[in-house]
Structure formats: C-alpha cells, structure tokens
Amino acid sequence: MSDSKPHAGTRSASPILAHPVAFTVALCALWLLPGMFGRGPWKPDEPETLGLVYHILSHGDWVVPAIAGEPWLQIPPLFALTAAVLARALDALIPLHEAARLASVLYAALTFVLVGLTARELIEPGRAWLAVLALLSCVGLAVPTHLLISDVSQLTGFALALYGLALSLRRPIWGGLALGAGVGLGFMSSGLFAPACLSLAAVLLPLAAPSWRTPRYALCLSVALAAALPWLLIWPLALYQRSPDLLQQALAAMLGRFLGGPGYAEPLRPGYFATALPWFAFPALPLAVWGVWVERYRLRESPLFALPLVLCLAILLALFFTRGPRELFALPLLAPLAILAVPGVLGLRRGAAHAFWWFSILFGSVLVLMGWFEWCALELGFPGQRHRHWLRQLPAYVPEFDGRIFIAAIALTGFWIWVVLRLRRTPERPLIAWATCVTVAWALAFTLFTGYIDRSRSYLSVVTQIARALPAQYTCIARTNVSDAQRALLHVFAGIVTTPAGQRDCDVLLVQGERPTLWAPGAGWDLIWEGARSGDKKERFRLYRRT
Image (cartoon, rainbow, N blue to C red):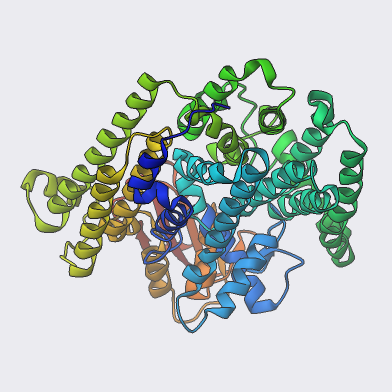
C-alpha cells in the first residue's frame, strides 16, 4: 500500500479529515434513510418479501414462508423474520411496509460496520473509514440496499465472514465464530450461494497465501464449522418436520439458481457480469484493480490483498454458474472490492487523483443542477415543455409545491457545496468527493421526486381499483398469470386471496398480462373491470365475473 500521507497541517485544516469517522457515519445515515419512507412496495421483489412478512405476522409461522396462504420457498425466512419483528415493534408508528423496510437499513448499517472492522484488521485503524466510503460509493449498491429484499442481509453475511477470515490471523476462535455466523446468515438469507462461495474461499485461502497456512487457521475453520451448523440445520429440519415435500421444494429452489428452475430459467450468460460489473462496482472496481497492480509483487504475502482477492475469485466462479443472472447477484462482490479500493485510492498518481476529483465534483454538481431543473419543471411548471413531458409519462400525477421538501433539498445542496469547499488536497479527497456525490444525488432524488417515482412504480392504486370492482358477493377469485408480487399486494393491502385457475369453481377471475397477448376466458364470463398503473403502456389487469 502506498505510504503517502497528507501533511498534518493539511489534515487539521479540513474538518472532514479532522473527524473522518464522524463524517463517514453521518454520510452513511444520509445515504441510508432517503428512499425508505413515503412510498409503497415496488415490484417485483418488495411485494414478495412483504407477503412473507405479512404471513409471519398474521399466522405466527416462520418455518414455512408463504404468500397469501401458499408456500413460497424461493428463499429462507431470516430476512422476512427480521422485517416482521421490526414491523411488529413499530406497528403504531409507521405503516407495515415502511417498518419492514427498516430491516434493510439495519443490515446495510451492519455491513458498513463490518467492512470498516475488516479494513481495521487488514490495513490500519486510521484508514478503515475509507473502505466504508468505497462501499457506499459503489453505483450498484444504492438501489438494492433501499429495497425490502433478502440480498441485503446476504451481503451482511458475506461482510461478517470476510471479517472473520481477517480476524482469524489474530484471534482464531472469534474469527471462526464470525466466519461460521457469516456463512449461516448468508444461507438463511438467500440459500446456498453464500455457503458455496465462502466455503470455496476458505479452502483456497491457505493455498493462495502463507498467512493462513497455520494451525491457528485450522482452529478457526473448526470453530466456523461448529458455528455454522445450527444456522444450516435448524430451519431445514423444522421444515422437514412440517413436510418432507416442503424441504424438497426448498432445496430445489435453492439449487435452481445453479441448475435452472422456476425464476432461473434463463440460460447461462458467461459475459453478462463482465459487462455489468464495470458500472455496478464503480469506483471500487477500478480502484481495486489499480491497487492490485501497484502491489502486484507482494499479493501472496500481504493479507490485505490475498483475502479479498480470493473471496472475489470464489464469488466470480459462483456467478459464472448462475442461471437467470441479475446485477443484484453481484452484490457480495462489493465488500471485498471495497477493501481493495483503499490501497488503490491512496496509491493513485497525482494526475489520476486530480481527474477523479474533478470528475466527482463536476458530475455531482451537474446532478444537483439537473435535479433542481427537473423539479422546477415538474412541480412549478417551467419550462413548460419539460413539465408537459413529465405529465405525459404519468398523467395521474398532480404537481404540488411542498415547503418541507424544498427546505430539505436546499439543505442537501448546501451540504454538497460545503464538502466541495472544505476538502483539501489529500490522497483521500477524490473518494470523499465521489461518496458525497453519490449520497447527495440519491438523497436529492428521493427528496424532490419521491411522489412521482412512487406513483410510477407502485401497484397500490391497482389493488384499490380491483378491491372496489369486486362483486358484493362471490365464492372465490381464480387467477391466471397473476404474479407472486401482485398476489402479495392484494393480500396485504386488500385482504384478497386468489386461487390458481382450475383448482376451484370460482365465480370471479383475475387476469394479468401484456396488452397484445392478454389471455381472455371463453364464453360464460363478463368483463367487469380493466385497468393498469398510470402511465403503464404494457401491463394490464382484467377482472371477470361468471355469467
């Protein structure tokens, strides 16, 4: 790692570098909270998780995840159980879906802490906060960690296991406990992906780096195995006691991520992540690559490089065999890349550091100005052409000026200007500027445009329309092509439970699909309602009643 350090006088001249941990904590809080409140659950992932949470709260059953009474075994129940506990605790204060979404805040905050602790073990205490900023800065982290999805707690499991492997060099028993808990947390969040990656990394690590070829590491692995077993066995055994078929379905769903199955039917695409990672992991990835290049002659001897590199390799190998790929699946890569980004940013040459700094400043300033310009167009009506464009996209939206939103956005803009003016020329400056750019842009977007974004993505209006259109008396509601997300929303917000078409002789039928290919029943059914989200030109819902 580069030994270059800022001059003491320069550091003390900047309030940010005088109190870097406090600044990092404040930036994380400013990054975490916007986007969590004032909106409904967004498809496709949030409604499904909310359906699981609602099932736990209404039935007290955490063993068999279910949506609207039907088992849903795509993921284990830990994240939904955490969200259910928070929803129950905050029931009198905020809506169910917002309280449940705080589970993502909790796990994301834990991830930041664990990445900082790992950096403290591998680098030095005075630089650990840079790893947190490198993680927060990643472009691909913002959206997933603000959604009600179990991938957030899986990332926490990876961060905990990474910390355990780093800690094993100094305290093997505690490191083993952290490693085993990380494996278990990853498994109970999203299935077999985390145990597969972390087990492979634990095996490869002593082969790649001499620091882990010791009896202390063997002790760490023994403790980790004992610590992981309860996580790996308790839920599957409880599920087996309910029904061996349910356990078989859960294992099939977990293996489907690698072998194909429901939700993972898309074939292998080896080049998918090669094209997605450069933007998803920016700027941690290029900084990590630079840091590795600078220290390329001592990678095996340095735990700082060997550990995150081995974990990155294990995750990439698992991603190579993943079916139905999404950028979301690469989320665990960001934790080790954030560690590697620290020596990368500290070792940047002067020209590269200046380029990164000016890019961050210019890009952040352009985003802030664009945000204000588009807000004026949307809410205040000028320029008129942009105002009409916004409303053409979403005709149901009603513009209004909210003084609280205006003041909050002014404060965010002032914070951005303050950071830019107070930063001094130090090796850390470009990363601080980019992290602040990402944070302010995210917070400003969900301060100025929350109402508009929610109206365009939320299905709660559709649920309300369906509930109003239902006949006063009916036996049951059959469904055709209705997604799990929509089933969950209907159950949670309207108390409507649907049945797969053909299972029962129902007198109401709900159909979902795209306009050109929307399925229609034959004779004997009357169309009583048809609708869609405002501005949605593809998806359509129809409600029929038997004649």
